[in-house]
Amino acid sequence: MSTLFLRTLREDPADAEVPSHRLLVRAGYIRRAGPGIYTWLPLGWRVLRNVERIIREEMDAIGAQEVHFPALLPREPYEATGRWTEYGDNLFRVKDRKQADYLLGPTHEEMFTLLVKDIVPSYKGLPLSLYQIQTKYRDEARPRAGLLRGREFVMKDSYSFDLTDAGLQASYDAHREAYVRIFDRLGLNYVIVAATSGAMGGSASEEFLADAAVGEDTYVRSPGGYAANVEAVTTVVPDPIPFDGLPEAHVEDTPDTPTIDTLVAHSNAAFPRDDRPWNGADTLKNVIVLLRHPDGTREPLAIGLPGDREVDIKRLEAQVSPAEVEAFDEAQFAKYPDVVKGYLGPGVLGTESKTGIRYLLDPRVVPGTRWITGANEKGRHVFDLVAGRDFTADGVVEAAEVRAGDPAPDGSGPLSLARGIEMGHIFQLGRKYAEALGLQVLDENGSLATVTMGSYGIGVSRAVAAVAENTCDDKGLAWPRELSPYDVHLVVAGKTDEIKNAAEEIATALQIAGHSVLLDDRNASVGVKFADAELIGVPTICVVGRGVASGVVEVRDRATGSKVEVPLVEVAEQLGAAIRRR
Image 1 (cartoon, rainbow, N blue to C red):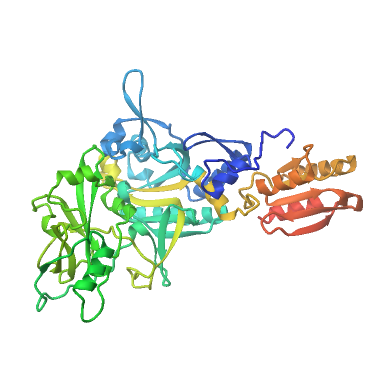
Image 2 (image 1 turned 45 degrees about the vertical axis):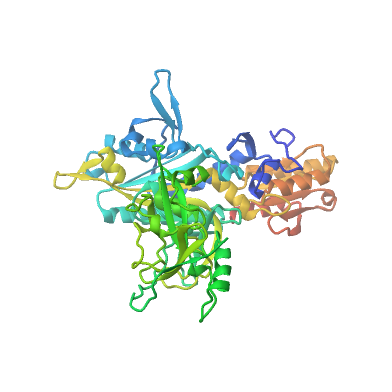
């Protein structure tokens, strides 16, 4: 450590928001180069390479073959699939000296597809799985949380190529099993959840989420085993209600009731029910947002949902992708005088209405349900407005927030919510990219057949942060042995030649046996060395100090904090045995 390119910090970096970011910087693993861009220092690079090694071993084990594409890519393939436009502002676009368009690759479906098209002429070259570990780029509007959400990141992406749908399923299953082995070896607490395909397209889609309170993904699970990203949860739709006998809709004065809470309070005071009090679920909230499409055009969209729920922007964006959701601000309201803020109702919504604003309903708003909703006049609401009788919409949308206690779509019990970090995502892409780029091969009959594809990603640099989040404590990092930058952290806790020589002998014996050693031979206090050892997080810490005089050293387990004294003559053998059991 006296010559290692390392500087540990006692204070948290000012821009760090989550534990992994704070500790990876403080322990000398990474340094910020710019917003969302990080330099890997020697310790961090060793951990990153260990993640890559595990991934390569498991990908190679299923017969996938590694290739490596450039990060700088031409525009034309992405233009052919529409993603040059669909990625919008998230794409880093550059021009060369001849003013030709290029991009920094965010993902490489197009390039893999064209490579296989160029090399594989017939079904005899299939099935085929190719992968790469490559630096990717996305122009995140708000990079945050260190390695968890950056503009430059390392990713493993692999692609399967098959002639039939059955072949795609087999390739998908093989990748899924490999991912389970990878994340088990990384030491992550993770869950596999159903997910949406989004702009990637395709059919089946699953995410591997690492449990973490700081995770940006919310997922649900039920006692019966259902698990899904919140964006993929579907609402249990109630049965329609017959219209017969339902009261007629009527407009009432409801002054100063622009919010659901004020509307419910006024309704209970002025129009009490006989059976129970009014509540937010009796009201129909109509929310307008603005969709910004990849080509820059903007479209208003109205969403009707029960008033006791909010619109979940991430769920909505999953439904309208590749469009992005923006606020419908005062300037927009000014363009639509018939849209009365706080008193908006279905009467002026829908593509056939006077506003022409597309109107989508929450699936719970089934025919026959009765609602209190805006009358499109300030200070007035409609009571007993019946869906399907008094109003209709242009369609339905899964945009309402999912709550703990909501029923699972498969009937397996009430949902609970948790947060996680997306570590991997696997897709059955199907033929979307093959058709766009003309990837066909000759089948057994000599006819051209379009290839079907799967796509499988892992966040490699993100894995470093996710494992750190899963395993750190209040003292610092605590790496699983397979990821640790070194096998043993050897602390020289004394200044005598006897202690220094004993430490050197242990280090040499371990290195000869093929184990990596971080030897803290610095001229620093024992307290500083212990603090750095706990901060850096190597799983086994060996303290060579005053016990040498009695023929013993202290071995500490970083994760558990347990300590044992080991005879000096046995320490190298015992440490080596512990490392081999990983």
